Image 1 (tube, rainbow, N blue to C red):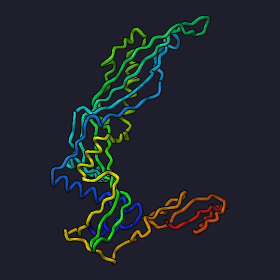
Image 2 (tube, rainbow, N blue to C red; image 1 turned 30 degrees about the vertical axis):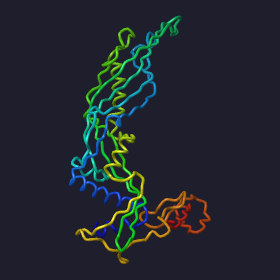
Image 3 (cartoon, rainbow, N blue to C red; image 1 turned 90 degrees about the vertical axis):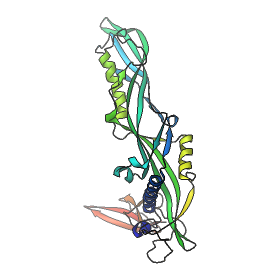
Image 4 (cartoon, helix red, strand yellow; image 1 turned 120 degrees about the horizontal axis):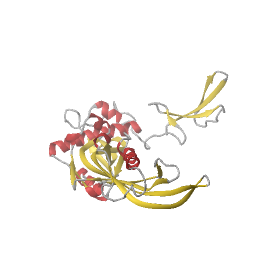
Length: 326
């Protein structure tokens, strides 16, 4: 670890967590590459189900037939039985997220729904309902998702133990399944179920539009992430990392040249005595300083233990309460 990273890991606040997560992820990627370590994800751990609200189907008729898509359930599953994720697929954008293993995996998208058609006729100028019919249909498509494993370090601090610098933190990992929308083929409607839309007097194009729209909600939002947390997956992560997720670990540190990092009083940031620092409830941190602020509008606060900061805006005076991190 270089001096700048060590300094950042010694700040006793969120900056230390970010630096510690980045340093840990870098070290793990190097270890996994050197020792050919992969993280195995099973098909049973990758299944995401979501319900969508009912919505109207455009039939092109205002009275003779109206329709609604009901009981809409979309699910996504991984197609291979297992997949091995490794550091070889990690690119710059993944490094920013502290990813240690990445893989592109084929997925299947399925949406199941019922179509209820209401039949009517105009009687004395008013539309009267005279019957209804319901049938089930579905939509199916295949595409590629990116599954990534990222390291999260919290409560990061540096400690001097036996004359040697250590990095101590709580370790966790996050597995994310992200749809790559452009890889998904157009949804095929009615691939696995028979729902004769002609009997319901519904245009097939209208039904296609509804199902395609539901698929787009999943594949093309651009920010569609699903966190995976199956028991087998957690066990696999703990096995490969060699620690229990959420546990506290303490790692001996080396200098950039590989020599042991001995304890030094100079150059060390806050020692975190008495615990890490944070802002009081209702306050937010001021940039990268050790101060916190709370906006109080036009009323001057009492601000016990801190100081009042007034600012003039035209004829108004606005007030903030500044408090030190504790």
